[in-house]
Length: 99
Image (cartoon, rainbow, N blue to C red; front, side, top):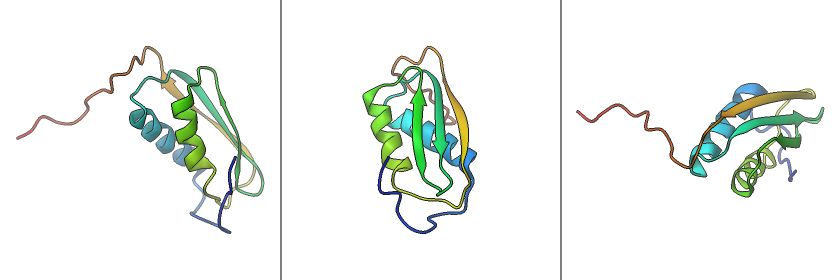
């Protein structure tokens, strides 16, 4: 997956980390990814598997860049994230109106 640097790069909060990373990558790649993401971590605190039912090269590259670069003090585990359905390349504008 990557270098999986450091002895401990951050305290382990595996599920929230995966969710934040997936949401950030979704936005950075134009909100076009749909379906499910499954991420597996090994006992050494490194992500060892990324599975998607509707992958695209851009989001996979974004996920690998984050997940392959850090290590956390977690035990082995898996988590899932749902990107949604019908994402067609337009990110929702959740910001409040100016003023």
